[in-house]
Amino acid sequence: MIGGLDDVRARLAAPADKAARPIIKLLKAAVEVHQSLDGGNDVQTVLNDVMSLAKPRAAAWKHARLEWDESFMALSGVILTCRNPYSWLLAMFSRPYHHIGRRIDDLSTFITTPWLTIPRERMEAAVASPAALWSAKQAAALQFSERAKIPTRSLPIEVFLADPVASLGAVLEGFGHSSEGLAAIETNTKSNEPLAKLQKRHKVDPWRDWLTAAQVANFNAHLDAEVVQASGYSIEKASDYPDRLTAKHAESLANYVNTRRNQP
Image 1 (cartoon, helix red, strand yellow):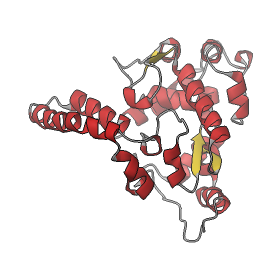
Image 2 (image 1 turned 60 degrees about the vertical axis):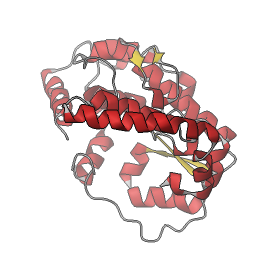
Image 3 (image 1 turned 135 degrees about the vertical axis):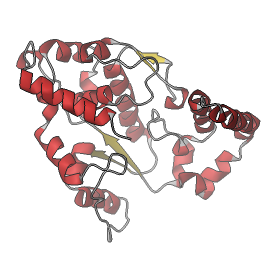
Image 4 (image 1 turned 45 degrees about the vertical axis):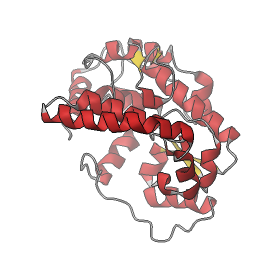
């Protein structure tokens, strides 16, 4: 959709981007061949990366590290979303999107393992840990907000889920747009989980029952405290967490992880 805007479309026609088009065509052909042999996922990933990197930053992959450039001038504003880092950790562990390498089934190991990034992230090839990934991307979002020449608004996922219509409506009106006609989608478009269930889970912060003192301490080791605070969150104290999870909480965490990993 963003790529269809006149200013952004003009950037896509720039010489540097045109140079990538033959490569993109070759990769598309390779995807078709490999998919016919039941092995096209790796080639598809490369294709997605090349296509994303050929675009201006305003049309980049939605999870890419933000960096201001003039292509954003085609937009009336940018909504910056964020999530409590501890809640994000459990979500990433249960469903580690674009994780490179074998899936890590142990949370403690996941927390301390370096994270290898895919090219469309538009950042360094590896960071020290998942916490370092959260810190780097959120720091970039905060810096983007300072440098942007168009309006930006922060909309934490917790605030959005609590009341999608009111929170998004307020942001749109802040950009000078009407919020008339906004309506909440009643089910998650990926998992089909009802909105009411999502709201209930985020309201009670279940991740507080799913972390141990050592896990919190190790996660904190690579969290940028200033970035966490500037984003409206707080660094958790490891001393507030148990050495081991109770059987009830361990079962609850396992159910959450298994449910998310079994989603389409």
